[in-house]
Length: 199
Length: 199
DNA sequence: GTCTATAAAGGGATAGAC
DNA sequence: GTCTATCCCTTTATAGAC
Image (cartoon, rainbow over the protein chains, first blue to last red):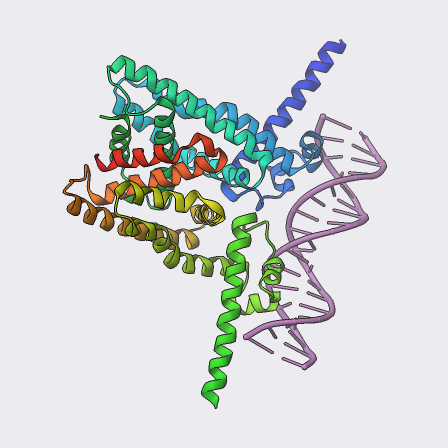
């Protein structure tokens, strides 16, 4: 009996936690951390501020928890498209479009930059965030190494340096794209990425 | 007499305006727009909120005015190093270091991203900001065209597309650099930029 | 564990004095 | 034109009920 009750309570708790983090992702991305009140997040999650404070101790704690979830999830999300295609151009285009296309990509980029801005100002956020970027680059470097071997191509620089540049182009072009979509053609971005790989 | 009095008043007014914008640049970059109160900006400028409201109508107006100043100034600032060097590597390195090095570069990047985030959410900011980026790219494209002609090199893509990619790498690498400096070596960035130019 | 109610603080904006 | 004083609203955080 006790085990069952406990499990149910745990589930409820986990559900509330997930709801709050989910609502926070959405609102922080759309309006920004400081522009969103703890109450607004709670309401969007169909809970109250009491629950938020019980779980995270405050808005700041919620942001930190959000980052931890984001850290594990989004890195693989971003690179999911990379493994699914066969042609290199398709792979590169898939990754770029994951950042720029539709609502999903748009809010991804917004939340990414929102977190970056907080990380750049506050080491508590910056530390985990830096590890997150290192993780993405590591996955990317591995993917590039595998690809280079299979394709019989040698990278122009170390996989790590190449990953920095590739990620840089992706982020930097997505940033420009968001303000002025026609100015940043997808094809041009893919061609630039090819340059970095030495093709 | 009247002319002199008017000029003095105009000077006072211009001085207050400049002080407020200056203080706002600094504080918005360091702490973020929403985290800074109108009173904090006024105090840092040795003025009061009354003056701020008289000049800009509010905090939002101050942000907009800041963007207009930023728009004209920072674009040329950024590319100033580009024209001063003779070697291409030095030129590229100078531009990258202008974004990453020291306090000046650090706060440049922070304010840039702060403005971008507002621009991505609010068309009132996004419009002018998009024009600002277009202006930077245009200057960059011209510089690259001139350079290619002088150096007897032909760019791999149109100057416009090349400028998008170059600016993308610069911003994208600077973003990574800020969180984790050792992970983004200046030399690797310069070499990546060379790739994009077709060298 | 979550909600309701509320205390305490801070911020944006304005009116009127100078 | 700028400052002082102040109003009103929003927000954070907590205390106690269920």
